[in-house]
Each structure stands twice: as C-alpha cells, then as structure tokens.
Amino acid sequence: MILDKTDLWSNLLSLLQKKINPITFNTWFKPLKLYSIDNKNCKIVIQVPMSVHKKMLETTWYQIIEDTLLEISGSTYDISFILEEYSNEEANSNGNETGASVDKDEEFVTNLKKEFTFENFVTGDTNKFAKTAAIAVAQAPGKIYNPLFIYGKSGLGKTHLMHAIGNYIVEHTDLKVLYTTSDSFKDDYTSIATTMRQDERSDRAEKFRNKYRDVDVLLIDDIQFLVGAEKTQQGFFHTFNELHSKNKQIIITSDRSPDDLKLLEERLRSRFAWGLPVDIYPPDYELRCRIVKDKIKYLNIANMLPEEVINYIANSCDTDVREIEGAINRLSAYIAVYAPTEITLDFAMEALGDYVNNNIYSMSDISVVQKAVADYYGISVEALKGKKKSKNIAYPRQLAMYLARLLTNESFPRIGLEFGGRDHSTVIHAVDKIESDLKDNKALNEIINEIKAKI
Image (tube, rainbow, N blue to C red; front, side, top):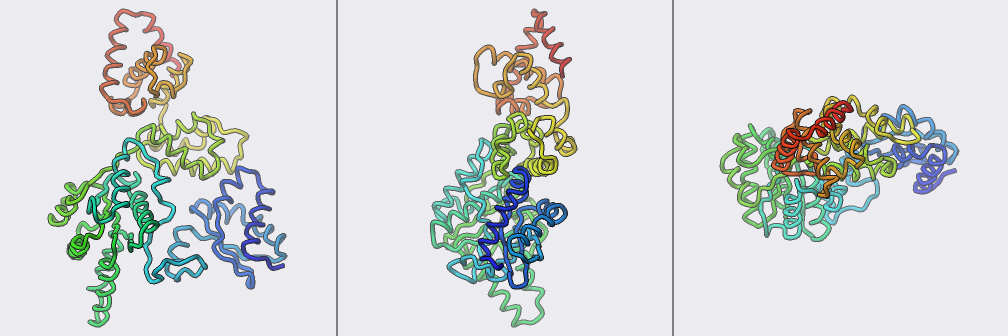
C-alpha cells in the first residue's frame, strides 16, 4: 500500500509512539523530520538534529523503524539518516529539491539558520546589551551602529545573535542579507588568484563582487580567522568600504575586541570601531539556569528534571552555552538508555560524572557548600541565591559565602556570581562579618564545624 508521504510519516511517528516509552520517544524520535521519501524505490531519508541521534537510530532503533514502516506500507524501506546541518547545505546546493518554498530570488542563498531568533535567545545581565544593540540594528539596518562588532569567547551566543539579526531583517524587509564565515570569504577570494585562465579569473572576480558587494546586509562570522591572510584582508577592506559607503549594514563577530586583533591591518581594526563594538560575557549562574531550562524544553524532559538537577548542571557548566548543551545531550542519552522512573540528583551525577569532573564540578564546589548550609538551616539553595534579605536567610547566606571562601579555591567575584550574581564586595563583607562574629560566638563556631563535617 502506497501512502502519501505526509500520511506515511505521521503514521510512522504515531505507531512508534505507541511502541516506545515516552522518554525514549521524546528524546530520539520527536525531534526527527522527514527529509525525503521515494515510494517507488522504497527509500526514506530522515533528518536528525545531532550526530548522537544518527548513531543511536542506526545502531539501536533501526530495526523497529524498518518493522513499523513494513507494518504501515507493506514494503521494506531502505532507511538512511542525514544531519540537519548537512541537509540544509544539500538543499541549498540542489536548488531546494525537497520541495520547500524558495526565496524571492532563487539564485540567492542567505545561509541564515532560521532556528536562531531573538525570541529564543536567552537574555541575562551578561548579554543584555549585545542583544539590545542587535535588535536596534535589525530594526534600522545601515542607519545605526554600522558596523556592529560583537565579540566574546566561543559558545556565548554571538553567532545566534548574528543569525537573529539576519532573520529579522529578511522577515520584515525586502533587503538582501548574506551570512558567511571569514573562512568562506577567504576561500572565495583566494580562488580568484589561483585560477589560471584569465577569462575564468575574471568570471570568478565578477561572481565574488556580486556575492559580497551586491547585498544590503553582510554578516561575517569569526573575523579573527583573517589573521595571516594579508591578501584576503585587502579584499575585505575594499568590500567593507564599498558597502559602508552605500550605507549597507555590516555585522561582524570575533573572539576578541577590535583592539586585541593586533595581527589584522590597522586600517581594518580602525573601521571596526566606527560603529559599535559590544561584548558578551560568560553567563552568570542565574542565566545558566534559564539556559538549561530553555534547552531541555525542546527535548521534552522539562517536567522531569527537578530544580536540584538543573542547579547541578548550571553550577557544573560555567564556561559557555555549548558546555551546557553537551551536558544536556549526555543526560538525555542516559535517560533514554536507562529510562528511570524519576530523575534524581544522584542519577544526574552518575550520568554526568565524567563530563563535569573534567570541567568544573568537584566535591569542594560552591554548590556543595550552599546545599550543606541550606540543609542545616532548613531553607532552599535558591533562597541563599535569591534577593530576600530577611534575617533567617541573610545570615545563612553570609555564612555560606564565608564557607565557600574558606573551603574552595574560588575568588570573591566567582563566589558572588554563584550567589545570584552579587558583587564581590558583598562577599568580602560577608566574610568579614562571620570572622568578626566568630571571635565572640562559640555557638557559631560549633555550627560551622557541624556544617564542615557534613561537607
């Protein structure tokens, strides 16, 4: 029986959902998308979001998919999986053969990732200014902050913001937007010089100019990779000048500020400062918690994770968003394999033990101190990190800060960050306060010893 491809796909997912436990289905099957079906030759290509899905489906779940397709259609299908990033590239190179709607100009490809928007960019104190500037540029391209130069270490959301700007402009205007990386720009530019035939070289030069200068908005990612490429820097310099002179918007990202790109030409670095350089800092504890919650909601395990597990991930992964995503992917895979009836802190620690032990978390971590103090006083860890200043919370908070300073190697600013983003001076005051109280309060000394024993 030959079904319409939409019916076959929806029937496949519906039947799989009945056969597989909810955690497994939500983790491995719900994120899947149909890429293509060839009913005549019994072939199906399924799009997966990450390589871990591809490996798991090929090794563990292939047979049940094949059997279910046979049950629905009466035919045995050849099943293959394609990563989302590759399927997007293939769709672009094949002129959108999958049947999706095409852009107004079929010859032009923006390279934008539609999933990156302002709405799903999780905002906190460390990236609020960068997002505000990005929205301003998106709403008035070429008229304000040109160029917009976003910098910060890898994995903090620079590329997300860049795509969000592009997507907003495409959605609300008829402007031509191009996203590229500095490596792609370099490859395109150097291909002109390496071409032997004069006519072909001229043709490539014309295509280069049309691609990069006949746009209204140019977004170029990781500009630091132009270091050492003097000829390409010249090409970008002329491209920048032409676009800027025509009030075309330029957005650039880098892992360091314009002033720190010492190996780039001075004339480029000075132009980067013409508009607005904005930096993104590593997320603070509060933002990391919100990022964890935002990421897990797409895996449909949001209602399964208690706050203490979310706090554990946020405390353990404090460098960038990608580290948080790695921890969530690892935990999701562990959940799918073992299908626990509930997800406890012990389960999460077992799942992520090797991963976080190689990163930040250890038994002398600030989070352990916080939990010990919170348990002793019968309050929540969140209360210690929160804004309430009542005495029954404020004093345990000061004591926890003191013990964090005493028992870990963390700095005052780091401790303040883990207590709701407080200033380092607040931590210093807390430490001084407890040290002063200890001189005359023997009971406090006993309390501290008891808490230290628990730790």
